[in-house]
Length: 225
Image (cartoon, rainbow, N blue to C red):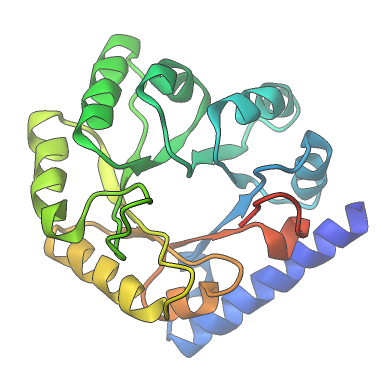
């Protein structure tokens, strides 16, 4: 498994570099977030041994079972929360993660602001936009995004650095990536987390600064992205 994960990482990095060159961008302008959800700590450790340091997890409890021990061995690792966050898990999330990508509703934003003030730990945050306006999916609606961004930054003083989206599975992702880019542009946000294993090259061409890749690195298991 060690060799497979290292080889997969190298292949994904080369695909990122190629897509960046096509878009006339520097490959280092794109951060690879290796999505380790549903994969064991042993697989994450192999990626760490191969030199990778940025990972994404969907659930607080799963991350709690993997990363505290790995941090002791690899103190420079960075963990993004990329899945929905329940308000009763906010304290644990702020203590454990380095970036929260899934700020998706006012109540969660308020809870995060309170916990960051209480703990003194201010994590960079991304607002999740439901670009497909799917009723079953998390994320702020595009029409409400500008107001929500303003609320989070100005009233709650959250450290909002960018936006994230997960386009509908059955739709061409490019229009969703372009929509997210436009919302970010008009709000002066530089970070765009968009693109997964099946479409990250297209996301890079449309401005992604972070791509979330799981299956192409760790293989298909559970619901890894």
